[in-house]
Image 1: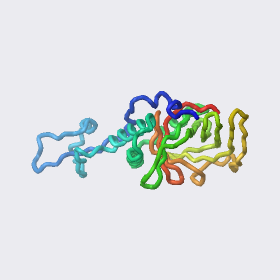
Image 2: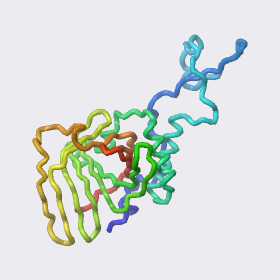
Image 3: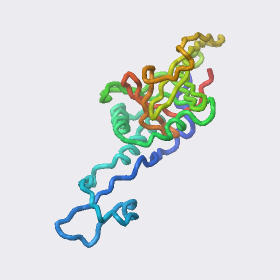
Image 4: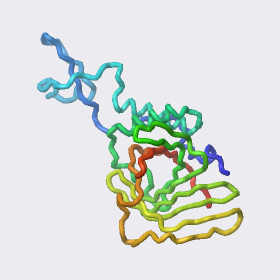
Length: 248
């Protein structure tokens, strides 16, 4: 069986980096019973001449409470460490997934990052799966499972690879709307040892029909060049790490 570590793309071993800013941090002004000599603003707010005219009605966040952006950055680092070592405790991975799911991030670049701009797309190794709406439990995926997403060709491939023993792959079409990737599998390929692959049609219905939420789908919460986080139609949440394509 191919080692998970050996399949990781070199970029997955790089130090974790903060994801792009999803939005401007909320401005907060400190109130005072008397007119202050000056008001401390964030760098973004200081550039606006109208800030002092409309003080924020919401109280500033406590200094010891991390912002959503900081929480996401810390969680992403946890997941990248988990992908690299597979030694981060499951409880920490689940907590990181929960924080990422709660964040409101810009999803406009997710599909291109996930599936690339040219066929055959990009491949991602499944690292960890969590169960339950509140992510009560989860574990590292025990075998080599790789998904290929092809944004240009609107195709998907889901495979389980067992090294010299063989492999089992499903291939079909996909669609993307907002942050939902729906798909329909059309064929399955079975390979045993050195024997040629056996391809079995699955139907997949009308090939002109675009997959929808009536079909299996993933709801994506986070995608960068190294990791991706999504929830399946069944409610489970997982994260993947970018990897090299596994030869069939």
